Length: 322
Ligand code: UT7
Image 1 (cartoon, helix red, strand yellow):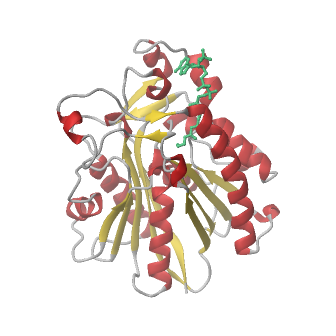
Image 2 (cartoon, protein in one colour):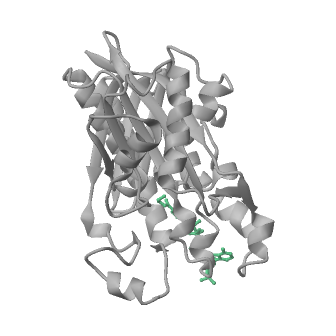
């Protein structure tokens, strides 16, 4: 038994913040942002929106594409590092928004890798016959945890959500997933306050937001993703020439280009949305996937390599026959 992607969906908040807008907010330039990251614009959630409302909208669209209803869903996994609350978890809030009842529902907090971790878990539940219709989401409101006075991070991140529906299939489907992490790098990319550490400072109005040693993250990301590609292909017994589409995490165009070079894939075979979405952490891969499915680039039967790297550090991949 395998799992397969029965439908995809995504949602981006209406408000767009361009690099020109950011030039008026911090000491930066459109040229710097484009040349260092590839980002041109990003979406920002409206005050009444939250991670769970973005997630629910992406989920509705994925359910519609898959032809399933709330009553069919029997597993809800959400990847996010910007949950609405400490608890209840975003999975349960999505249940509530969509009228899904009596299913496992949870969120996973492995930063930019949390959609991949969620996808891998849902895949296992389906393979084991314990789920028949899994809703898997990556959703973020990173605009809420960015320090808008810090030019080194404020220009990078965006809000959005993407979702997939996984159903059982006798043929793959998801061929393999690979997850990993290394906590020794936890101080290179982090948010400085949490419920059991520094929450009192946050409540008292302490400044700060996402903190990243960008240059150091960049180097580890490129090297880690390079070996991740090798390990994923070896695990599945697939040659890189068989890959139709690379659907990478959208943190930086230069990191994406390095991954494409590693696979000898022309950029026309790489789904690139970083220019329009910025870095949406866990949402970036399902957002990119949905964009390329809906505009007809990704076709049924094609082989996709999904790969990601993020805070923790955490990383992961999936080889998917769409
Ligand atoms: O999604 C999770 C994983 N995250 C990533 O994979 C991100 C990895 N890192 C990156 O994408 C890149 O490192 C960045 C895009 C974040 C930065 O690019 P960089 O080429 O590594 O630049 P840098 O951090 O080395 O900074 C170069 C210079 C510095 O000035 P000095 O020290 O050379 O004088 C920064 O202060 O650019 C300066 N700088 C800026 N200048 C204009 C930093 N931010 C800005 C800015 N505008 N927004």
